Length: 137
Image (cartoon, rainbow, N blue to C red):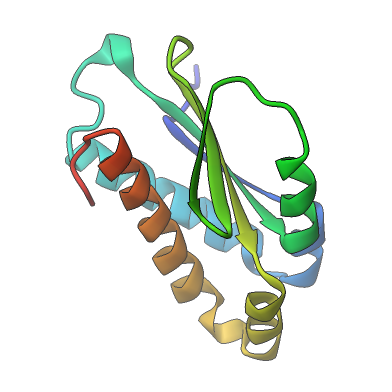
């Protein structure tokens, strides 16, 4: 029996094709964020657990998502991060762009991929925490 984790990270196929280690990095990051948010007591009330689906995308895919219709309250956290929070369903879809300049940097220096994604995603999680009055991690 498998239980759905509160935080899921999905990556565009284009990014997965460009970075051979990305799948491994994202799996580790997903586990890390789930553990850190658990330790920060985000899930104290089991009836009100927010499920967050992150979508890490290229700038082009991110721009396309901005034109699509989604359910919930729209929040722009930055030029490269926006989310839809469907409070009645306890779900959030959060879109995170790897901008063209970030992509060039990561392709030139793939060894920084892990640290870069950790920092970027931690910042996004803490922006969500601030918006929803949750403990920062």
